Length: 111
Image 1 (cartoon, rainbow, N blue to C red):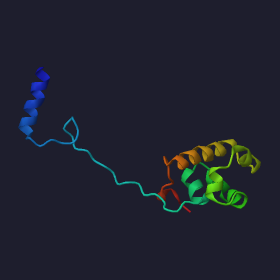
Image 2: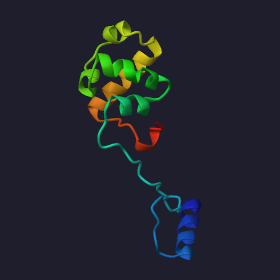
Image 3: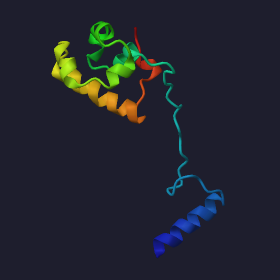
Image 4: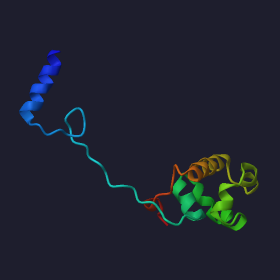
C-alpha cells in the first residue's frame, strides 16, 4: 500500500502527463525495416544468407522461378547437390515466406 502511495505522489510531482509504459519511461521505436518489392531466387537466397546464396546459379538453371522453388521438395534439392544444412534453410524460410511471416530485407543483398 505504501508503494502505491509513493508511486502516485511521484507521478503527481512529475505532472499529470502519462507516458507510454507503466514504468514512466517513454518508448523509442526504430525505423521500420525495408523489404524488397520483387523477390526472385537470388534475392530469396541472399536474404536467407548462411551460405545458401552459393547455390543461386544452380537453382536458377534447374528450377527456374521462386514459385517453383517454394513448392520444391527436399529430394529434388538433394539431387541438385545442395547440402543438408542449406536444404533445411531453404525449406524453412520457404515455408515462412509462403505464410507471410518472413521477407528478405533490402539491405541483406550485398551483390
